[in-house]
Length: 192
Image 1 (spheres, rainbow, N blue to C red):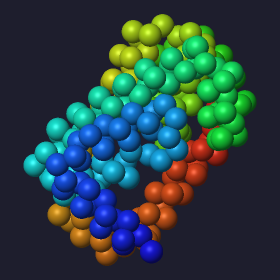
Image 2 (cartoon, helix red, strand yellow):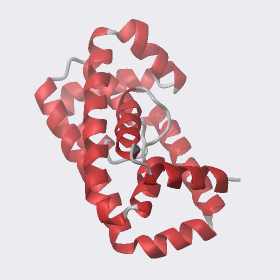
Image 3 (cartoon, rainbow, N blue to C red):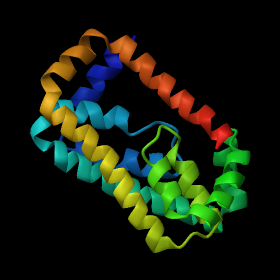
Image 4 (cartoon, helix red, strand yellow):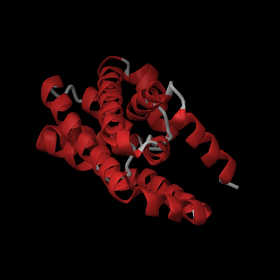
């Protein structure tokens, strides 16, 4: 079932526009889009292991730019744009809880939540809605997103051949597990 999508993603990863696609998906994922960027980063690194860290850099830059956009949406467009995004995830309570946590824990919230499967866009929207200071916000986003993407890229660069073989033999199992993590992350929003 996932083979055609996987093959298409590998073809996209080898295209000359791959970096732009990766930046765009990372940007969207950090601000409003429900699909995790890992679904594109992993096949791209597997297709071009020698460019793993360049791809992680593109992904990090797109994610931090998207986080800034999410912060702006939360700060200035809360009622008209941010709340419909939050309602899509049924995370209205989580937004309120995160806003309160930003007042008490600040940067630690970004550093912890940026590494988890919890949708990062909820964190960026909540940071903007609570008017968390922009420079510490961007610094924490840079640290946490770079840590996540460079860890993935580094592991794939080192063990890419065996990981690619494993993925291709057990693609349905891996994608089901990945979808389970995404759903678990969304459900975890209720318990922030």
